[in-house]
Image (cartoon, rainbow, N blue to C red; front, side):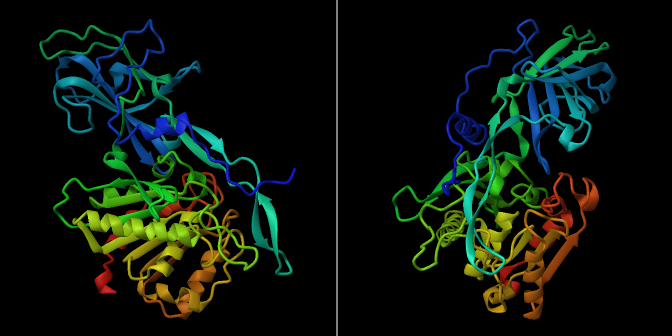
Length: 464
């Protein structure tokens, strides 16, 4: 059977459930404990998650004991923790710090009801609060160049991963293994607690304030992009705006995958209290910008189409218009993989909109589907005024390194004055700052580097 060109969307309850995790304020029914024989913790217990280079991970357990404890800086030897998902076997969790506090948060030791457990270990070993459903698993037909230069269609899979909260099926069990002193001089009576990842207990620290939104073209309500928008806590101060474009694996309608999969949308927040907007492409192909076989024009995938790039430009301008705190001289675009490709294409469309860009693992300028862009100096000339930083691994087989090399060579020939290119070697995790298992993931290095974010945030449109 011949593969279909249509995109297979992952929708339904899983996507809707994921979308309500953050910024929606929805009421969620209290979950039934997984193990009814275990005592339930006080309702104030929380699981704190962070966005790491390998995705969302639970990094801290905040246990509400229900009684005020005497302040203690080191309780790591007094408790043990395990995590269990559904009927799987419990897995021990290593503790790097355990101490008392008066709130469910990381910080200095105080007396209070909470015991805060900071978890130890590599990011990929920490519990993740989502399960992922594979989508787009069937091949679709894409245009590419044959060896003789003719255009052919070949089948390829553009797989996606749609997140669904594990909710109450993920349970961290805390066991007291030694005496713990209360503030009144007595001893803590309880010895075992369960803390689940139900919506009311899971706190995505890095995604706090990322509200949902939608932008459309033509007023039809159909040609739309859903997005997440994060605003600074102090909106009266001028702050930069970062547009983050995801890659092919985060295509969908859940409006969550694009902010969970990497630090592209959140890494900047360690360095400045910024505005961040992260749209999600709803499908691989664009129903509102399809290929015209008669003229050989139009079409594309992901962020390649002119229609989607117009939606992106309109979204950025709308965020600036609606938020007086955005500094229009400090608007940046960053993207990974197909998002890096889209970021460069958008910059070429809108050279006066952006003050700088970081583009890991992208493709040659002008690429349509899998047809290499055959970039030219004329095509890249609009980018001459904008600072650019490309990243790529020489061993990348998903998006071959030649694309970035060609872009950089042509820009250098044009005399670009603020151009950086970091090409690394990758064989296994740990090489060149990589934390994932693919040479394609040069964004592990780019988005996890303070030097990169500080370089980007130092760029101003008026200084070009």
